[in-house]
Image 1 (tube, rainbow, N blue to C red):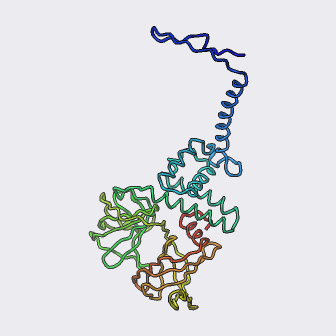
Image 2 (image 1 turned 120 degrees about the horizontal axis):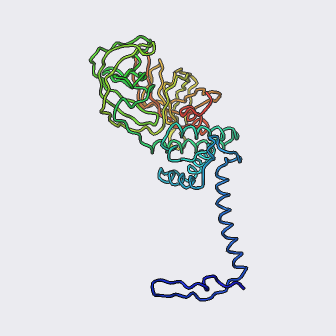
Image 3 (image 1 turned 135 degrees about the vertical axis):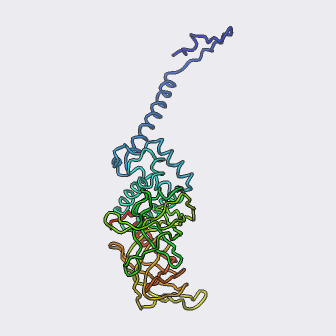
Length: 368
């Protein structure tokens, strides 16, 4: 029998004496108590050890030791605030764990880091197989990445904050011209000298006022007013100088990330036959050639010589790497640029595999 140690020393507070009642404690109770404490401490140590390893028991690539138990709590809190569902949350945890993330808040707010983690997770999943389950996991990965991107709203207050190589859309009144930013850090905003469809330079007169629009990689749209300062050269290439602006307006946020491209594609006109339950789609065998100028998982814009009508439906086919991508699209609007017709297409139907292939290209996760 072990007598409680508290029985030997009465507790005192001021002039009040409190004497604890003798209460025998059995050896079995002591052993159980110690076992519970050891079990809890062992569980915490084990959870932390497991969280430092990837799904195959390997440490994260960053060498920082992986996601700790408490980082795991932080990831789930972040996911809850963003609005990720259960599968997307598990995918975020997997992406961070496989790359050894210990500061989830920093990664969430740093697009380059976030893409590094998701790119590694993408390749691990892609290498696991090519079946429907693999495609489903990749779709969850991209849906989680897209939700995170749309929830983190970066703000611009000046054109000096714009990163190089962002595409500006210049509205000259007659047409829209796309130019890349060469440098935003100097006294002026240096952009590549605009060209027409034949590749000849367009000289917009000095002092001309322009309305400019651009979208960041996070799909945020902004606009500003500027004027042409003059012309020069940057790194041996002709450039146009625009005045900086400290008055940027937030326009909109694209639902899906979009990427500039030059991809040859084939279009086949799609007809609708019948009505109601007997309605079916007929694909015309005649091929129309075009070039995709930019693309997202929701649609694309294309340059082509053949004029088409707004509302027309097409089956679109193109190669991306070794993958054949196909989608059913509908023309939302068109505009003429010289000899070319620019058509803007919304995808109506895309297979899961084609959707993942497009997303891998847009996010630059695949091997191109």
